[in-house]
Length: 132
Image 1 (cartoon, helix red, strand yellow):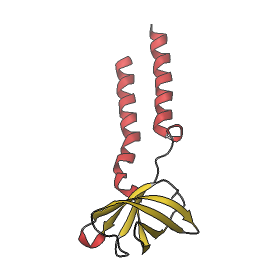
Image 2 (cartoon, helix red, strand yellow; image 1 turned 120 degrees about the vertical axis):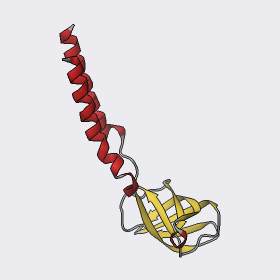
Image 3 (cartoon, helix red, strand yellow; image 1 turned 90 degrees about the vertical axis):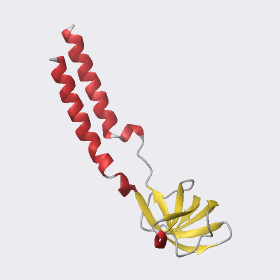
Image 4 (spheres, one colour; image 1 turned 135 degrees about the vertical axis):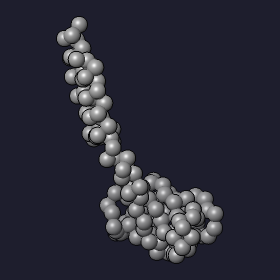
């Protein structure tokens, strides 16, 4: 009975984790660069609401198969316009490039996989406790 429970638990965990792995490439959003200064640039942040101060991203050149141009940190976001500080670059940033930011991961306590593990651990502990 315990072996069957472990098999069912393993299959259920694999089914719950699989959708997150399938959508791994969909987490970055492309943002238009509006203007470029010496070490800062502005970008259009209106398509999403989760961009916040302190997030880090990269700038890529879409004409050259998304080759890395620079890394940046978001300084501020106000009225659909984000300001970013260039941390390092391989070539000068221009308005022909795009900024990429990944959506922040949810907190550990809002992850359904965590709560599934808590429930499975409690149920497994109960079953094992009753068996012995």
